[in-house]
Image (tube, rainbow, N blue to C red; front, top):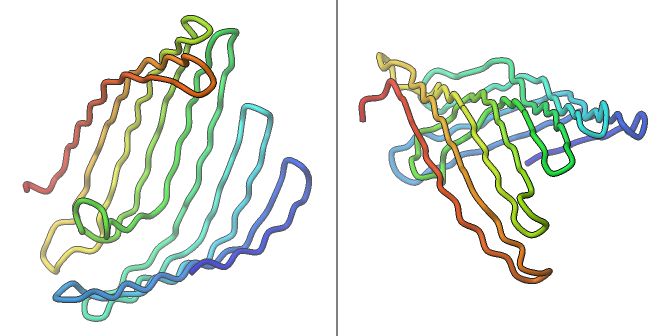
Length: 186
């Protein structure tokens, strides 16, 4: 559940107070827990091409059996876009926490930090090329006693070309790669 109170200070500046409550109930041997996460945040459009979304809070993960986890959360996104006659470049950074349950691997609760880059260029009116790259660090903090905390570093790159044939039809070709470095052997 999520409860958020917003206040619009100006057209460009908005503040919020937020509380997120997560309950994880598992069938089987996986440990159940609850997360309590109050925070305060802002959305600030510094200019048309520069934006800031930022929340600072504190999470408390109440685990049924293992030692509880808690800490400061910094969840945010800052991005700058440069626009040119036939293209654009965007840089952004983000951080926060994530629960991997329901993903490819159920490896628990993680804190993440990341940076993103993207660029697009119009080769013609209907043909657009683009590239994007991201780097992300995930720290999985729900470890068993005696286990080392898992840390994954992931870099993704996508290069693509889009043909906008008309208003209702387009075609895209892309190449993507992902490199993962982890201190977890498996």
